[in-house]
Image (tube, rainbow, N blue to C red; front, side, top):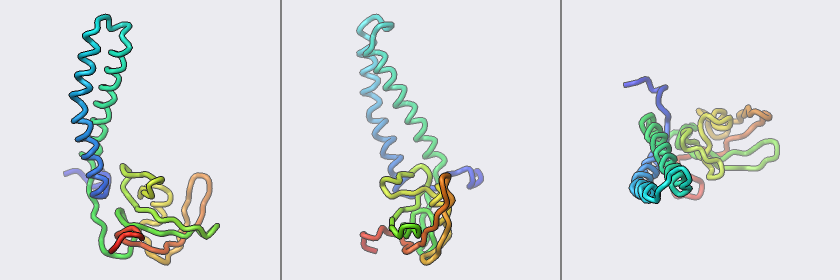
Length: 164
């Protein structure tokens, strides 16, 4: 087996999401192939916009499948421990010390990053700064535009509004 540094850590939910997208694309593949065959049957391919679009759509689907299969191949599911230390899969509530606003994020593997959904990757400036810290710690986040400090208010296995 290859060295662990060759693999991408990911939560179990993130892995399931990759598998679900692969299944959906594989289910859509026969439809895309049929659309391409139908468009091809319309004659002259050099001026057939429907054929060009169908070919592009199938190429896009195949490309996305290759990408997701590589992500799945190199993914290693991480199960967070029951400690109060920040690690992949844990939820952290932070206070930004410059304006005293708060935010809650789940620390996730890179393939799962979605800040709008409250998922910060462990390799982002924020994720890197809070990893291996505990509630009560104040850490400095070094971002490209500026540095700022955050205080970890809560570190847990569940989001604040979900039952333990």
